[in-house]
Length: 268
Ligand SMILES: [Fe+2]
Ligand SMILES: [Fe+2]
Image 1 (cartoon, rainbow, N blue to C red):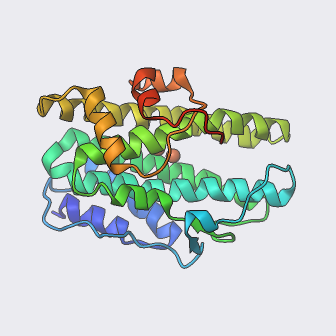
Image 2: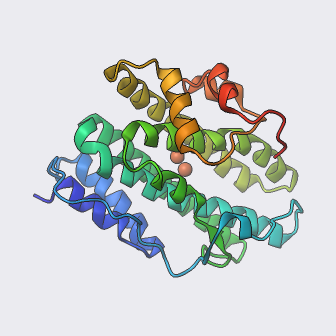
């Protein structure tokens, strides 16, 4: 039987978008059907494979998207979202493959399900781009998400604190205003896509908080204090208002937690 680690590693090392999508869905399905051995006999790659395009730029070098409703502006928005979902596939795979051995089969099941969700999100966004005559890879993208995760590769608590509980939680804040903009532009299909993604992302953040809480308990630490400490130590970006307090609360993130580490009064 193939080991779980080997199957996840192979999916991380698939670079072509279609191959990555199929591999992520395949590993989630094979695990669910009991076709993979719960064994961690190989290491996860430092960096997952990426397609030749999009060109990856440093976050500060990305061209400004602008807020206009022009076709170019719309394509830039959907391309950026597709890239986030593409990287999210790897983030979920890496979580399961890197930390699954110490965290156990339920953890693996949760994060492989998330990887399959992200693959589905990417596929839907790719289709939406195609409906505008564009494709993933047409524009540059940045690798800030992977970099932020990479800094926490040594510790599952730090990884959970930063990836689901900061980066994915950020999606809960920014998606509702994006939905409004897309609605105002008359893109009903786009609105439905984003609403679907938002629902799934709430589940993803909640799963992250659940496992983080279990790790904190096992280490004899107060969950909220451990999270704040790890975010301050390992997250180099800014945590900025406005926050989607109700969605965050539904995921187990209290206002007190993220307000304690947020930059006050920083505009988006
Ligand atoms: Fe997603
Ligand atoms: Fe997600």
